Figure (cartoon, rainbow, N blue to C red):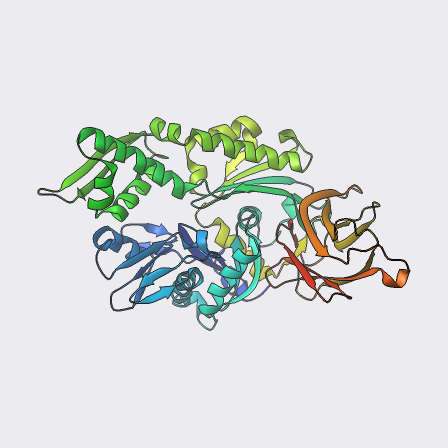
Length: 507
């Protein structure tokens, strides 16, 4: 085990770093999380909020979030939150005559975590530099590159990615001496519902305890805690308009200078409804006027759960779909682990228990589990591996393997094939990607196809056949890049496979 291993949970709503290693385990039984220690928030992750100030300085975290309440909408102040959702997009923010891209805003969050972590006494004599970073199960290659670019701009090195629910599972079951030996032959479903995404993965430990494999994963990208804040806000806006007849939504759009305070108070109400049956949302000076209009409303837990009833049902269906993908049943799952703030909503927990029973539990310290799991992976130097054999299905049924089950997901791994195309009916050679799951000999198409233009004439001699050279290699973003070159036409077609089932080779 390394002296220090650093893990980062780069979150939509909150972010957190943690460390583990021999220099930590001497005085602690679990990885240290670099909590935000704040009078208002207590021991909490750092809010993923970036404040661009009029003097071009940048503030991140709790101070930025607090300042939103007072300065949002004020000339010269720009507040950006939930940048993770647009990390690979063409979105831009204008501030001080300069355009900021998502990866640049993301880099400010990584800088903040780095600077805060470096101050911790445990880091004395160590550099906060090389990190394992967690990502949602559905992140594609562009999104992963966006995260890596953010890290590089912040002066950090990416040592590896790990899926967020997978990291949470590692943190929950890890023991400093026994490691993850308790998971031999066990199946664990991780239900990770946070601020940005719902991520679910089903993991199985090998009988020899040497490897953990994802049997399947699934998720929902755009129905999570941040969206539920807006549900509460929409409901309270409607109530406000009902009480103030003659006003319209246009009045709220043009006269509301408290949009960010409104969002913060709605988010706090959502969190408190996991503890209390009823909460109040108060927003002073909600609308400009003489005098200004305040917003004062109560929200009950039952009202909130009704607002998100459809999403809760969709999340439970997603969990079942993940189990079915692995050709298993809820009864064959040994543990169900719930992670993330949205998982703490009582109705969510109740419905998952209806499916899986008493084997359901909430992970220790849900806010820190993902970062701690990443730190453990970094310190133990566990290598990411491919969980399901991935290859190409040919027209006659031949299967050409690109990635074996258990093969290391490291940049050096690559394969090369040469194909001769003999069927030019549609002017394209179609490479169909397929998986072999759980050791099955039967291949299942993934739905991804790489099409390569070919010469649309039937050759008269074998020397005239289209010769296609295929190279498959692992990228630094843990994706599989497939490039096919037509030797005659000189053209190159590319396809990147990001949806690789993840595994860990345990030393």
